[in-house]
Image (cartoon, rainbow, N blue to C red; front, side, top):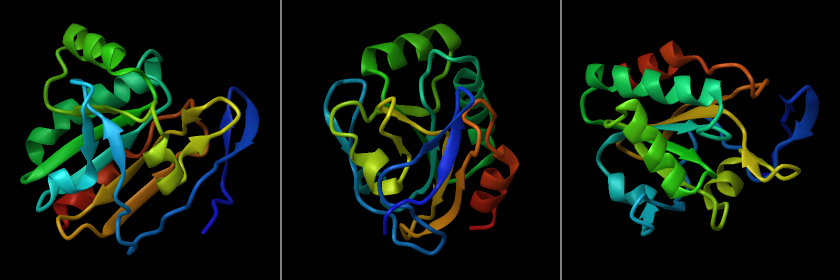
Amino acid sequence: MSNSKSILFGGNALKLAGNEIKIGDKAPEFTVVGNDLKPVTLSQFKGKNKIISVFPSIDTPVCAVQNRVFNKRIAELENTVVLSISVDLPFAQSRFCGAEGIDKVITLSDHKELDFGKKYGFLINEVRLLARGIVVVGKNDNVVYIEYVPNVGEEPNYEKAINAVKSL
């Protein structure tokens, strides 16, 4: 299913590319790149609840806040990992996390193939970045919450995502 969503990016309405996913869908398998430049797949986190925190670039203020919030709030959640995905290079993600003391979220890069962005419908083709949003995937790999933030400059709804995990 093609994505029909549009988002605001820098005041411009841009259409998201890829497959729009919905609550109840089986989470599509994807491959991204870890900080060690090795492939990382969704199935590597089987049996855990997963918060997929999606953002355009680690080097913007809202994206930095998004990572800090999840790094802090992850302690409240049992059997849960936070996968923070952008198209930033793994080197930039590592630098940011080291400088900010972010040590509980797992930063992953979709820069190589845009596999996550295409399969989950977060790709902004015009700027080759990912839109902002959150996907919560239960340990059974079903999507239980999704948010495509309509304006990339705004924060996602952390409480709804965290409550979705707590209800599992």
